[in-house]
Image (tube, rainbow, N blue to C red):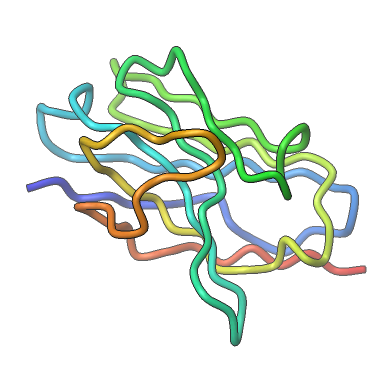
Length: 125
């Protein structure tokens, strides 16, 4: 069993930055690919970014490429999402996810094995 706990969400003005963190439990963190999804009101949950088990390869949705950076620290069992150049359309609940299947191109499985509880990110114009 893997538990995921997100933190770092909040309210920021357009153009600002936030850094989300996702701390995980368990001793098998390095065997999971980790990533982030988001869900805006009235919309489906969508893939944002993911990283392979070692963190060597990263994958991004086109909408965030060049602005967001995913990274992981296997020693701390934590994955991060650095979000720069935030836009009002980035407003959503952001969810951390874990799955052993690797991401691909600009996507990942839509049903990861584990989800966090979510953290709200609000970008004002």
